[in-house]
Figure 1 (cartoon, rainbow, N blue to C red):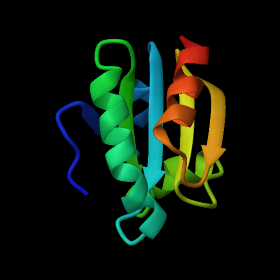
Figure 2 (cartoon, rainbow, N blue to C red):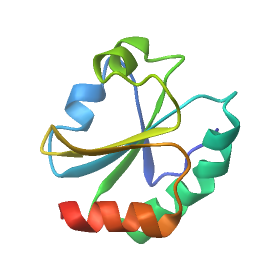
Figure 3 (cartoon, rainbow, N blue to C red):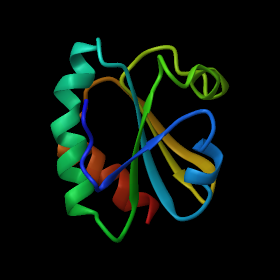
Length: 108
């Protein structure tokens, strides 16, 4: 899944630094996951819409197993919203743009 330049790719090495400041929405996904592929354009649209307000990032759970394990990501897609390094909200499963927008707006 190619991410746009609006979306950061995080992994075991850069994850903590990536969620440290501001509001960061992290999409935990895997390439083989059908619902994850369906969610990708929604995440893309949210990243474009919220550019400059939040950071949008993706974590490939097959590549970043220790991060996925630390945040107890057992089902994908899982979306976790961080604010200054702290988890403020998490949702599991396919969500639409309105649901994600609402989740982010409440955290700003």
